[in-house]
Length: 384
Image (cartoon, rainbow, N blue to C red; front, side):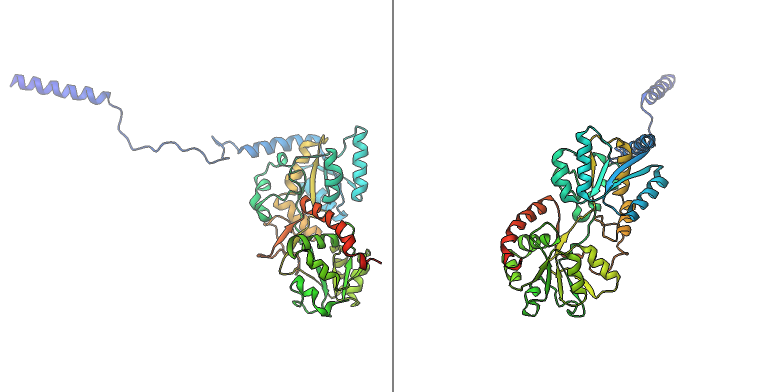
């Protein structure tokens, strides 16, 4: 018995020693997971937000943004109030016609003066006169707030750059009005296709701006001949004997008063003016589609800008949903951002799902420039 007791005691002691050396047993623990992309670690703010806060602090020491622009007084006032209230930044504007401002910018730079931060105007003169001179910087590095550089927020799921290098962005997503009808002479829906303009009933009833110079009529000819209908369409349209003039307001007035039934190739401004006055006009977007015309809604940043951080704050605000909503409502246009309200827009002013829209980028403009030369020959019989 004594030997058995000794053996049992030794066995028990050996078991206790082995258990004391083993790792403690507990509930299973899942392996640590990597944080989501862009998420902060240890409660820190996301990297973009940290960068934004540093940029904003630096912007406040700079104090202001100098914007060269063709925008009207209402837009400028809205920009001034928003930047001051939201970020404590001042807006300083240099205004005028596009060519006047471009001349001023180039003259200053040749004299070693760098006073401007950003440029908001039309795309054609910017691309032809400022970009070749190295005045404009690439836009991408300016984007800090995620929603601004998110391509899915913009029409066509891509950032609306005018040029391939990304120096100019067209945030204005207005539809180009191919033609406008007088509703007392043409029933809505009667001209649903570009081909409907070729019906015998409309021969001699069309007023058209001169397509042999840069402008809306030139864009119309480039759009239909090169993208939508083919070059033979223009020849058929010429046989309709449209009345042609370079006075776009006069053409609009004649259609509004019923002298002509259809208006082709004018800027939207005189049409909008007559619409506000109650004229029986209706812009038409044919079933074959149209184009998105950035117009004066393009933004670029200048190289050697004196207020780089304040400029970055302005760009991120302007291209955000908030900034685009303010601009779109103030200018009465549709933004190229898809999440901006369109409630302020009437019939014919909103992009329609399923229709084809060509983006009026630099490639389109180069094609339109070639069309100008061809139009001088094609429309020669009508240019008296």
